[in-house]
Each structure stands twice: as C-alpha cells, then as structure tokens.
Length: 286
Image (cartoon, rainbow, N blue to C red; front, side, top):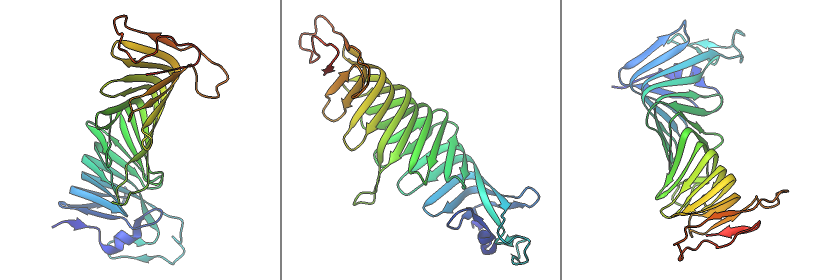
C-alpha cells in the first residue's frame, strides 16, 4: 500500500507558489527534521497540478517561511510539522526519473525540481523529452520550464520529427497552444552553436538557427553551408523549407548592413542538379 504524507503535513509543507504538492511512495517515507527534508522510497512520485515527478527515490527539501511563523498564529499538527509556516522548495529525484506534464514526458537518471523557478533539470544517460510529434535528446542535461512552456537540451542536442533532424550544442524548444484534441507540440525551436539540419535529401549547417514548426521553415545564420549530394552552397543566411524541400541562400540576413557573396561548389557531372550554375551577392535556391 503506497505511503503518503499525512494531510496536515501535505498542507503545511506545501510547495511555494500556488497549488498543493502531494508526495507518495510504495516503500515508505522518512522524515529528517534536523535536515528539513522528506525521503520517499520505492516508486515514489510527487504531483503538483498537472506535473508529476516519478523516481525510485524522491528527496523533498523544505524550509520555514516568513508568513506568520513565530507570531502565535501557526498551529501544530500531529505529525510534528507546523501548518502554514513551512514549504517544500526543491525535490531531488534519483533513479529512473520520469517527468510527466500535460502532453510531454521527460526521462533521465537524476533530476532536480526547483519549485520556486518552476523548472525541472534532468541529467544522466538516455536523456530525452517527448512531445506530441517531436522527440528531443541531449547528452549533458534537459531542462523543462513549466511556466515558460519551454524545454532546453544541452550537449549534442537533437530534435527529431519523422525523418527531419535538427541538432546543435543547445536547443531551446517552445510549446504552442493545445489543439482541438487537447494535444500540443513544439511551436518553435532555437538552435545555438554547431547547428545541423538534415532531411532525406539535404544537409544544412550554420552557427545559429530558428525553426518554425507551423511554417516548417528553418532559418540559419552565420557560416551557412547547404549540401545536396555532392553539391554545396556557402553563404551567411539560409531559409530551408522542410516541407517543400526548397532552400534559399543569401550572403547575409535580410536588412543586414553588409552583404557577402554566395559561393557554390558544384559537381561537374551533375548536369541534372537543381542548384544554380552562377551565384553572386544575391541569393541562391535549391
């Protein structure tokens, strides 16, 4: 039978901000008063609103609040906690960590739920974040910012959608509004450093990128390279339409003060190539 915090403790040790915090575990709960923490073991979970943290072990840290503590208005509970003058501000998750939101699920080995900042940070092996149609993976860490509807993947981060792949050192994914089926996916992805975009037919690289999931257009900035087969275009800005397969390359972003030339490296025997034979300071399409 799962063990839970007594109702009085659950109320007195509520998470900061709005909404109650419920902690459950199958093997039991340990309360360390001197260290001001609870330890829940065995298929433990902590739920607040529509966010649930699952793990083999959860460590909940609590603190005294300013409130009316010491003013004689707080009441003691049977569990030894003082109702109304303490709150849980951080939960550490250890082992088989799984974060479940409204339409998203994140996985990791270890995690920290900062309740003040409304962010969960996951580390470990096989880090991944699954939304309605996208999967995001990382090697260093995954962050899920509830209040900002945002996820950040760090370290060889990759976003997958079907046969499309966006990779970078850091990816920041922003979630859109729920559809008629109450499902929501990634609305926009911002990519930073060593950005790579690949489809079945094309590979694109740049220093920075922004992908709009609604238009299915990715914009690349910096040292941009577009490769299709043995042909390559080099420039400073590109628009890659992942839906139509049409790409546009320019020497610099629109309205940029400086204009650079676009260069093309074409395979001699590629007579059937769709790439332009000549490019200058304007733009090239493929």
